[in-house]
Image (cartoon, rainbow, N blue to C red):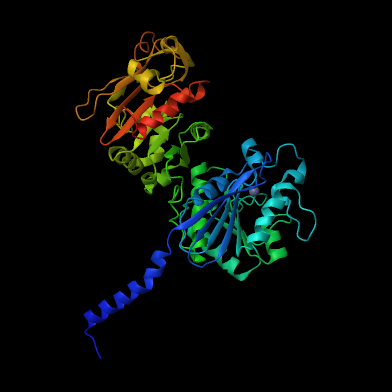
Length: 499
Ligand SMILES: [Zn+2]
């Protein structure tokens, strides 16, 4: 029997579809949460993602060292990924005590005793504390691969004292090949040759990676980003791309590398991105994330210009721009990043700007986003100073941001101010008029700023923009004790709830 070319193509296509059918059915993972060191101060969750299709089992560990936040953040994001085959076991925050203290070692323990990644002996010597629990994952699940996410303080190629920007693998052919592939993929995203990745084959004694290979024959790979020069979101992006490359090559079929929140994220949480690119103040993005995350109702991620330009805002409901410099944040975003943010809000997203982020939301700088019908006045005196300023709610502001405060609190309270914008209506015909929520009743007049400009102007404003919503805080509720709740309430409105 012979078929014409088109008929043959049709038959082949149908056969291909038939062959695909089981893998389509096999999609969707079972996601389980478990705990290590349960009931102790070091308790930390780990997640198992099981695909219905056969495939390798990969153990991924982040946060072994508390001053290396990228590994922890990337591993946390990967817990929400989909896989089409195999099993992922992920420990995002291995050493929570060290991570919470933002220091390498476990607080209270000296030298190598506090260094979790020196606590894995090669033979059957005694393992202490948390290392015992992590090692039990190796012996219980017998993973095919162990991946450990770390950070160095400097680029290895210019400073041999640090292993920053390197892939450190076991002496194992497949591990070597994978390391080369990871480096080629990540290096393709790095413009500066001095910041590219090196391959290293010596895994330090006492490390999980070395123990897994030498004691159990399990090949292992350590991926090190560099804290120097790069913001957290950028390092997390490198970690994600490295892990994606590896899982893809091993046949697990992971979510795309640009997945900050994947299909296995908690379903009913508000998805909030906090910008941490250039122009955000030192620690201001981290502080903002921790306040929003503490509420427990949001999934919070650091996001940078690279992520935004690559379309990552699609995964979120709200973007937050914290304090720092509005013009520098605008510059970091670039024209295409700014266009992506405007489009995000127009299509239904929420924008929250605080101080620098409030400048960015206005409409009278050539770099501003123009989300709010507000112009910044007295621009030449933007350094008008810092202080605690008396403010007063409007009825709408009190109802939406502080519904449970007393009438007296709503009349006279103070809020932290640091060179925030002074707004007036811009009266642009294509923009909705903003609604004032809080009014300045006092002022600061440092560095030559004239008196009488600030009192009576709105300190918090909001409006709709397309299908989305935008809000700008000139002052800093996140830096004022007792006022964090204003931010959390604003997120609810920005996420589309209430009026
Ligand atoms: Zn480390």
